[in-house]
Length: 107
Image (cartoon, rainbow, N blue to C red; front, side, top):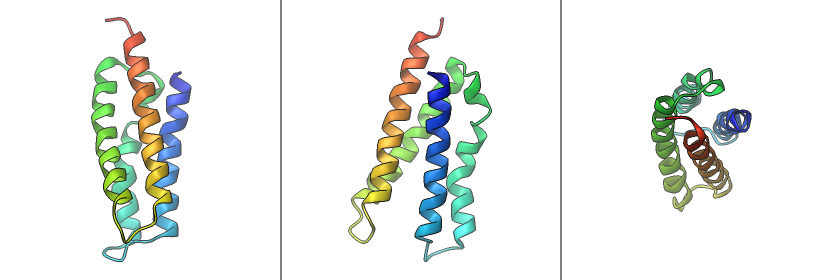
């Protein structure tokens, strides 16, 4: 299950990078936006191979931020709905899997 979480985590990073590459931001430099979107996730990349309960709690809080971003982007009438839908599905899957991993850990 930990490898599945690791794979979904990197799929979310890849999705955010491809999303920014396909639909660059009109407000700021696309490279800065892509780094700002993926840097918090990259910080957890090494930790997710051997997670503890505390790191999973902080990771779940981070996933709530990405979930909120997906919902706000999904209801935006000016944008496409496919990228936010994929981000929404990935964040829900990551959240559920991380909760299952955390519940199976010894106290």
